Picture 1 (tube, one colour):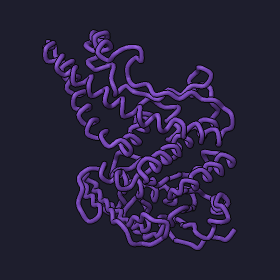
Picture 2 (cartoon, helix red, strand yellow):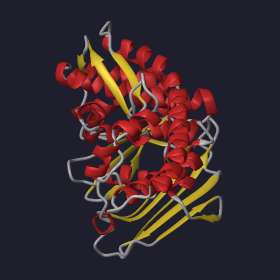
Picture 3 (cartoon, rainbow, N blue to C red):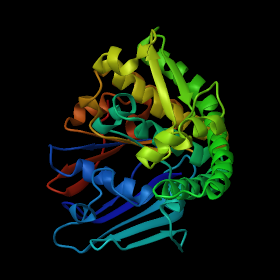
Picture 4 (spheres, rainbow, N blue to C red):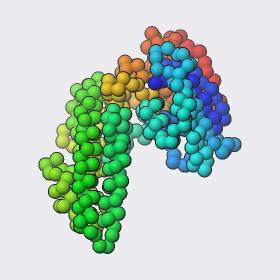
Length: 372
């Protein structure tokens, strides 16, 4: 799916804007603070039901409004036909929501994500390498959600079981018989979650290495999936071994919720060794690999939101990254301050077909691209 029409109302400083994006490349340019990122935020809201910039909805909604609304038409072919599947999101400052897909109301953000898969790269994306394991688990689970159909329900059951086990650990007196019942379910569900993640990881890994080699030459990285407990032990043994520790901390210290991606170079954590430029190339390779796997396994394409990427990547990595993205025919929205610099990234063969949008003080004007 790709966005063929985008109607944004009440998102930050954007009072009302109607855009007709192109199926491949869309350039959004303007001065800092003009509202470029707010447009990406609107698209993200459409596919996730929430913002990537804040958990405070009041900050997202225009001060003159008590709600924000984003509506789009989605196409599924190679033309810029505006007919297609309608999708809409409305969020209120009080936390209320109204989601619709194809004219029907839906009640979870996962149904939005299923309709419009979105991959975001911005300055916060470096947390995939430099941040804690939660960032990398979310990366893996995004892909598993879209590729492995059984994962969503299994993960929901796992979260419930994990929560119940932690609740028991907080009791002064624990019923070992009750804990044993929950442990059996916890072990079974942990194993299922780990298997789904491993199956997805096995698909992503060769794509990642191929893309990163194209971006960064011969640098040899070791990327592995840690399932959440020791590889040479069973989860049953790990739970018994860590029982006293779990009692003291009142939380479960082994299981699928402890999974992580371990990225190393010459035996050391990549975050300690890689340069800033190499780290950015790793992140870009991981995100492009996600899109490739989604296309190959589900025959679906995600929408890439690239926020001020010229500030995050040098010209060589940015140009090669754009080439790799264009190879998989994904729709791209890229922001920046320089129209000329962004247009220079577009191959001449595609120059006539780009969407060009100038944002100034929350007002979005669609322009004809300069022919290169």
